[in-house]
Length: 184
Picture 1 (cartoon, rainbow, N blue to C red):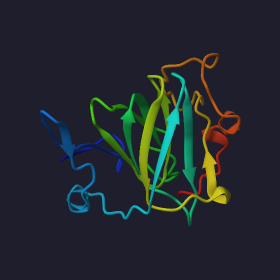
Picture 2 (picture 1 turned 90 degrees about the horizontal axis):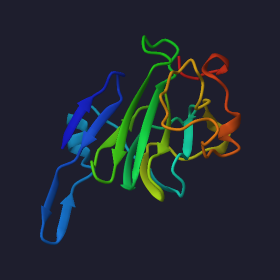
Picture 3 (picture 1 turned 180 degrees about the vertical axis):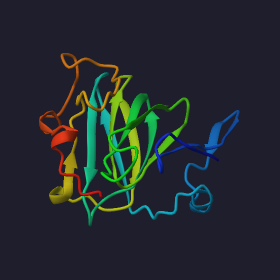
């Protein structure tokens, strides 16, 4: 398992080993000991799976506030996404900056997004399925987000405002300048 750092402290790109044979393949996609050795010392408590039917669907940018803040481990089971993590820790030297990586069923990569980051993705293929592990349970009361198209973030989404598929809730999220981030 390869665990790589990114430009943002704490956000890691993980590529599990894949053992292929005539039957298909086998892979260990999560190994607590290997994650700890790679600097990811968290305990996952819940797995979530989502499916997006249309290309150009954006989900996010989401986060939960303390005491229900979540670390996330994202991987694609089917299709492809542009996966994005935005630093929303006010005291961080990289506040407001983001990392964007393509995750797909084919490239088999995963993204670890720690507490203090907003997370979102855009589907690049139809019927894309995502599986993500989280370190805290969902709490509607602590569920927040950040506008996907905030120009201050400078995210190069592969979709226009006219063609994006977006939930009503995600269409009403605040810009970073208006966000009362709970992360110092």
